[in-house]
Each structure stands twice: as structure tokens, then as C-alpha cells.
Length: 80
Image 1: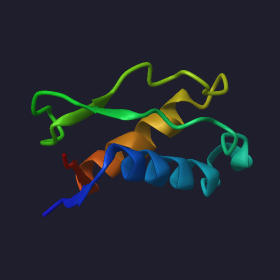
Image 2: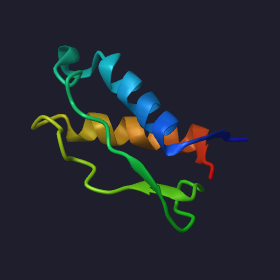
Image 3: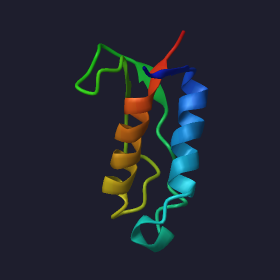
Image 4: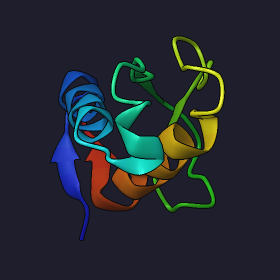
């Protein structure tokens, strides 16, 4: 069962995971986290998504941030 969280809490968790990532020798740690918004239920089974996923993401770090977002989507459900 997914953990209920606010958009701010989910954003904070994504950012924490980005900061702690050792992928690409830590080069992606300064990337900004996208902010979740409510959406229709998606392929991950959640009803939140992120817009402009790559805003503030260093070139080459896109796959790292996308993987982190997918991981958080699998664990967290956006609550009202």
C-alpha cells in the first residue's frame, strides 16, 4: 500500500533521493526535483504526475531523475 503524502512531502522525498544519488558519480545531486500534481490514475497506479520533469535537471541526468520519480510514484500516493 502506498504512503499518503502531500505534494510538498512528495517533492521533498524526490529531492532527498536526488541529493543522495551516487549515479553518475554524484553529478546529478544538484538537480531540482519536479513538483507533483493530481492527475488521472497512470501506469504506475498513482493519481499524480509531474509536469516539466526535466526543468532544472543537468544534461545527462534526465534518466536518473526519471528513475527516482518512478520509484517515488510506486511508494507514495498524493493526498488532498
